[in-house]
Structure formats: structure tokens, C-alpha cells
Length: 113
Length: 114
Image (cartoon, rainbow over all chains, first blue to last red; front, side):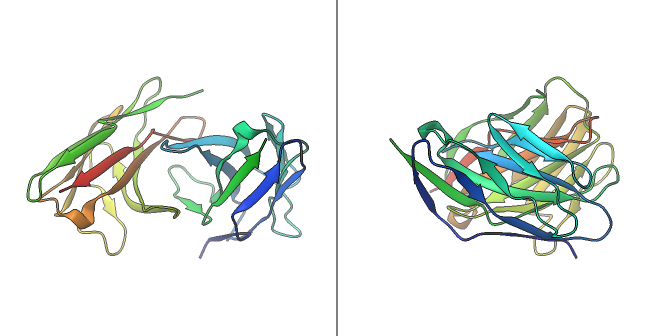
């Protein structure tokens, strides 16, 4: 079955530091890959996505590249801000209408001023 | 981007009562919506898939008689927690599939059962 593995957290960084959050997956076929962000007390927001191998999703300075050969979708940002403090979830979904999302456990990022 | 709303955002109820949570897609039609439950500092647990005009599909271990789901229109799904107990206290989140094949999430509903 499908599964998503995220690196263990939490992660604490200073403002303007470089961020990498690792995500690897196991899936049948050719899934779409997603990063969602959850701010305290809120629901999830789609941060970025990639639907096929070598695609790069990007948004708000974050980016992730769909690497089929390593089954990875690592999230990166060159310079984090305090406002980036949140929980980040990696997820995948098989193609096909209305397929379910499979989530990783999520990782909490705290950015210090 | 697409917007999904939930109502109420917070609800406190007494043990034994029922609570209804609404999930609406505001600017697109969704034949499929999903209901999740999230425990503190944990990932989302899919409870059920809500299909417009047909019965919901529940995940293993989720009691369908306790968590009633109705998807009456292409923009509205409801989750009713029947005879709520303190262990049902949680953060409930819905999502809806947009025609772009991206899932958009509601802001969540915090349920507290006393």
C-alpha cells in the first residue's frame, strides 16, 4: 500500500536559515505529491504540489522536486521566517478521480527571531 | 485559491448529545469530500469518504452509526457525531476535491465533549 515517511521532528531554526524537510514515499503507479502546511489552530493549506517525475512545485519561497528515482519529495526554503513556523505534512495521492490522500506524520517547524 | 468552509469552528457539548458539523465548498462543486480527525500533535486520520448522492465509505475501525455523514449536495457535506462522549473530543477537518483534482481543506472544527 501507499505510505509517506517524514523525518523526525521537531525542527528549530533561526530566522534566515536554510530549511530542508525530508520526505520519502512508497506507492504503486505514479502518484501526485503534495506538501501541506498547518498553522496553529487551523486546517491544512496546500503549499505546493507536483504531479509527475522531475516536476518542481514552488510557492512562497518553498520548493520541492518530485524525484522518482529516489522516491523523494524533500521540501526546501533558502531563508526561513518566523511566520513559517507551522506543521508541515507531506502527502501523496494516486491518480484517478477522488483518490484518497496518504499523509506523513507531519513535522513541527519553529523559527526563532 | 479554492475555499472550503466549516461550521462551527468550535463547539462544546454535553456527553450524550449529538453535534453536527458542516463542510461547504464555496466556489466549486465537489462530488467527493473527506472527513478527517486529528489528535494533538498527530497527523490526520481519514475517517470516511463522503460521496454526493450515495452512502459514505468509512475507514476501518470508524463506527458508521456514531459518525453519520450526509452529502446532500455538490457543495455540502455534514458530519454528525451522535451520542458524543469525552473521547470524541478532537479536531475534525474536512476536505473537498476540486475539479483541478486538488484537495482543499476546511479550517477545522474543535469539538469538546464535557
